[in-house]
View (cartoon, rainbow, N blue to C red):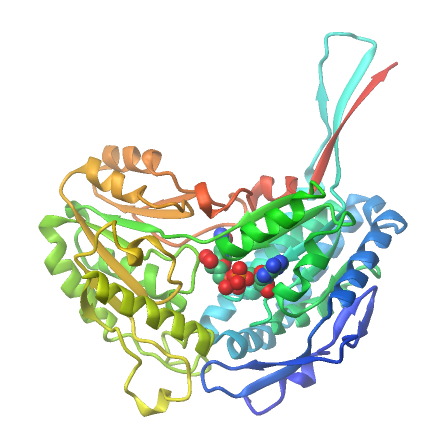
Amino acid sequence: MQDQSIDDHLNTGLFVDGQWIRSSSGETRDCINPADGSVVATVDEASPEDATRAVAAARAAFDEGTWPHTPVAERTALVARIADLLERDKEILARIETLDTGKTLEESRIDIDDVVSVFRYYAQLAAVEADNLVDVGRPEVISRVVREPIGVCVLIAPWNYPLLQISWKVAPALAAGCTMVLKPSEVTPLSTIAFTALIAEAGAPAGVVNLVQGSGAVLGAALTGTPDVDFISFTGGLATGRVILETAAKNVTKVAVELGGKNPHIVFADADGDDSVDQVLTGVFLHSGQVCSAGTRLIIEESIADRFVAALAARAEKIRMGNGLDPASRTGPLVSEAHREKVERYVALGLSEGARLVTGGARPSDPALADGSYYLPTIFDHCDRTMRLVQEETFGPILTVERFSTEEEALRLGNDTEYGLAAGVRTADSARGERMVRGLRHGTVWLNDFGYYTAAAEWGGFKMSGNGRELGPTGLAEYQETKHIWHNT
Ligand code: NAD
């Protein structure tokens, strides 16, 4: 069905004030399937004027519309209806995601299931939220803290988990009573376009959810440098996050940034075994390493390092690579040709820095993959902290290996990064496991597991990995202002 144009399922324009409109510039952009270089769809490319119009629509819907004052039961009913529609359209949404990103259909289906669970979670959380009564020690005073929607939100997402990342923002924003402008990555806008149509179908009032797709560099100032916006939630790279924080600062706009990671996966000798090999492998090579929380730095106890790395390499060489629509494929291509070239530059850098290539380091030789942006799972051994390969986010299928001899050294290496998004520890010693997870300066730490999350627990980074939290109760609080009402009765 790849031939069946996705255009049939998508209105490829912009969505502003409840209407699908065409870009004012008349410009369009082709969305490329990275599995074979074909054009999946051609979508409108918004101009800065379009972005300003979308912000104005969200502003008017907040200031003059009913949504912020709609009873919470009605708001959460809309959020739950969106979950129902996502479930109804799961297969086509998963297909769109696979065509646009290259990830396997199985991964895309898991993403959509996760999106549904995020909508269900916020529908119930917002429904049970209560005012906080505060005893001020004076019987005639009723003091309460109420929560109100923060206002107009700009929600900016990356290309690696397009629908998932935007849903972590849209679900709590809607539940809180905010209005919003969505800005998907220009590399992968399609699932967000389809999602916006579902939100409209679910009955969101005009202006509550608006969508502009296009270049972040072109639209950025109109979306993030205006006093009409109250909150910006951004997920993407560190460099872009810095630009947005600077642009928003002049209006003192609140910004939450979810940025990159250089995540350690620490394996002690007592956790040696197939299970550890499996988890390290999946932890780094899932979605070809294009995962913010990918375990890209294996930190392994010296005594088992040689054998463990050999076992990993043997397994990595067997990963079946191919078009994500083929059920036999275990991993797809990188998201674009430009991204593959970036990964190749990092491999060349690693070699020049003296890292020892164990496997990969090349495009696959299979002629069937020649038209796609595929890159082999790559492992570099004998790496150290001075290498840029060890310190910078490559966002590709590259694992670096560092070795340790003591627990203190393992912890030091695990924290030896400017990032702090996620980390994994594998050990059979529970006391040591507890010391390690408490010592690691990362927003999520997995002990004897890797890569899992739940809508009910906060996600976010320490240090350069970001400053906000998504998911969990804090993920809703980000979209709310608190107001203290002091009532002298
Ligand atoms: P990116 O920073 O290039 O782009 C992210 C988004 O920002 C895109 O929509 C882009 O158009 C937009 N953008 C670009 N310039 C802008 C500007 N000046 N103003 C406003 N918006 C602008 O990131 P990417 O390459 O799409 O995604 C990969 C990055 O995302 C990686 O660093 C990854 O670690 C990170 N990420 C983090 C998390 C997390 O939870 N912390 C999750 C997924 C991805």
